[in-house]
Image (cartoon, rainbow, N blue to C red; front, top):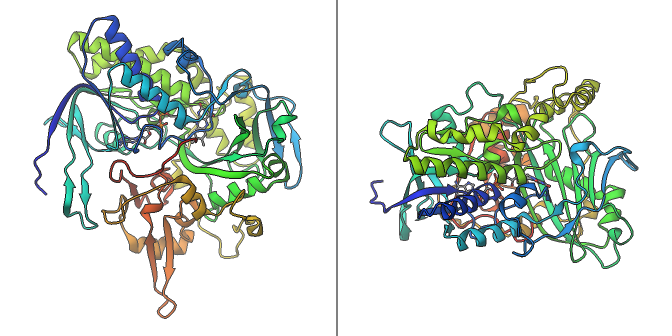
Length: 557
Ligand SMILES: Cc1cc2nc3c(=O)[nH]c(=O)nc-3n(C[C@H](O)[C@H](O)[C@H](O)COP(=O)(O)OP(=O)(O)OC[C@H]3O[C@@H](n4cnc5c(N)ncnc54)[C@H](O)[C@@H]3O)c2cc1C
């Protein structure tokens, strides 16, 4: 379709309104002010507002925040509570044991408990006050390159008002070409534009494959007299039940103000059993007596899901190319054993801003000039912190006692362990064929306990995420070969998409008369977690941005 598109020029364009880009945009404007430079800076966010697609735990290590905005408390930073005491628990089927030593990377006493939705909204307002043009409701759909195809020149936003077959409707609004001297990609884990750039410009050449975890999270309203009234431990992490010790993952429970609790469960996508259902495991976690006691008499207020890039240091891509830089989760800025990435993402954005301001002064936007960002990162505390966790996910993906031997050795040797630069498979390769004898079938959550209030089913969870997508538009989830789904994938893996998707986007329907199977897609349920793009064993699913402004409507996650 030949469309005439509006072009708007900026000095710097930030793609994504997460903590990485917002901290980057704020730092850039602070530096421009110091240097008396006038800049045209834009930030686009695919959610209807900044914060509406933000989901995290979240314990915030305030180190980057303090560097960026030392007066954050005067600026009314939305802090939900402060960690009083950490507790690390091992869960068996019925019991629990407090592990006497909390690993050092999980020490969070004095750190802040925040809602990433509320925190990013606050950062967004500060960025706007400093002069950043924030455009919520605009998704970056395509990366624009110079004719040489090696230099990034900006991003095209998605068209709005197409029908199911991609034909313009009456209210059609073509996407805009946002041109910039420097484009900053801060799309978070598994950015769709980042995926395109990395394939085109070989960003991950020589790196270990990126691996991911998927987290499902809720905010629950508790009664006035609750677990935290009489317990000092308000930062809880769990290991063991329901996954056992071979499947990577665990739970978190954080106290937040007004008698609420943030509760979530993460599963490492290196798991092998195709019958594992992420949502079911989350409910089983909540039904464990230890957890059920903490949340008793509560009511789920909001639910959502999101992936984290957890591969660590050896999966960090090239950080700068001609005309572009990569920050935050899409550049693997994550301390995986500590389950903390917000402060590292913020710091990476701030360091990128320093490099960009120098590039603007020199009027040189080549990878060499922007590459100062890489040097600044290498010398920063962020690099040191990520380096120490460099082999963690890799060890965690192993099975049996060897996993714990590796993790123990890494703990003692500050990350080196027995194999430094430990290999790992990409998550799409790890599923084993489903065994005919049902040996893979996992226990299911007690459905009788699904009361629609404290324990909600998947579809109610989707409803509580407030996700919305216009039905009459091209599906933003592209299944390249639907026959593969209903034939080979069904036979070999029993359609794992129906279990790894926490939003019930994928259904296999069987015609009772002909026994013909059909893949039914419900893209309007999508939570934008991107698990499908990562875990499908045939790489048969590509996640793209739907129309800007659609998707979840998180307010407290
Ligand atoms: C369940 C869970 C628990 C976690 N707990 C913690 C914790 O306790 N402490 C901690 O420090 N970290 C935690 N993390 C990790 C932390 O949330 C991430 O490291 C951090 O959010 C990454 O920030 P980011 O800005 O890179 O990406 P994100 O926070 O993912 O933000 C990216 C933004 O870009 C937008 N976007 C993406 N693509 C496009 C596009 N093409 N066009 C326009 N907009 C786009 C998205 O909508 C989103 O708003 C947790 C993560 C999860 C999932």
